[in-house]
Length: 79
Image 1: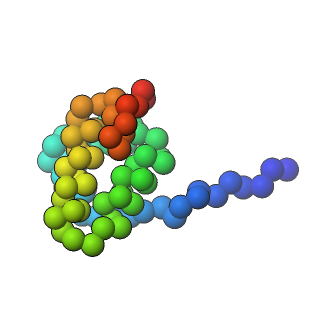
Image 2: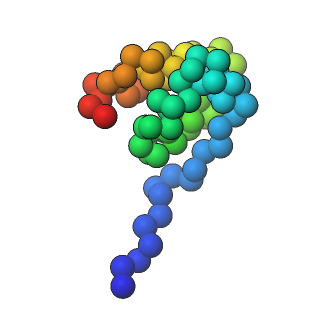
């Protein structure tokens, strides 16, 4: 019997402003299609910063990457 695998990082919660932005830009399906680790990484990246300006900058980059496709955290991604 194999042990249960645990995620390396706790699961991040999605703030309302992120959910709203995904829906307003019509990117919810693209976000949901990403692997769980990417969705969690994006949320951690947004949630961990302290200033609102940085949160918004990270959110904008996530939305732009989802819209463009083939990009994850500034890196080429073939998903």
